[in-house]
Image (cartoon, rainbow, N blue to C red):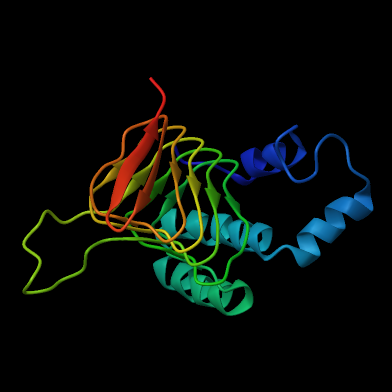
Length: 182
C-alpha cells in the first residue's frame, strides 16, 4: 500500500493526472512551485523515509515545517500510497496510524485520525484505512479504526465513524451509503 515519489510522479503524467501526457519543463516547474498539495506530498515522502530510518525527531521537525509551508498536517508515521492528490491543503490532517491507498483524492479540511483519549469513548482504538481510488471531499472527517473500500466517494461535510464498503457513495453526519454499485 505504501507509495513512493516515483509513483506520485507517474500519476501526475498519466491520463488522469494534473500534467496529462508529456508536459514541458515549464509545466513541471510550475506544478512544483505553485501546487501546495504536490509540495506537501514530496515533503512527506522525504520525512516519512527519515521516520522509517528511525530519525524520528528530524522527521517530526520536517513535518512541522511542511505544515507551516503548505497547511497540511501529515504525520511522519502515516502510510500514503502512490498517486495521492491533495487538491487544497488547508486544514488537511492525516494522523500517525492512517493508511491511505493508491490514487486517493483529498480536498480541503479533511481529517483522518484516531478517536483520541476520552473518558466518553470506550470504543476500539485505531486509525482509518482508506482504499484505492477513493475521493474524500471537503470537510470529510474519518475517525477511528474504520475502513473505506476501494472506488468509494465520501461526500462533503461527512463524518465517518463506521466502515464504508467499496464501490459506493456515502455522505452525511454520520455518513451513510446513499448509492452503491454492485
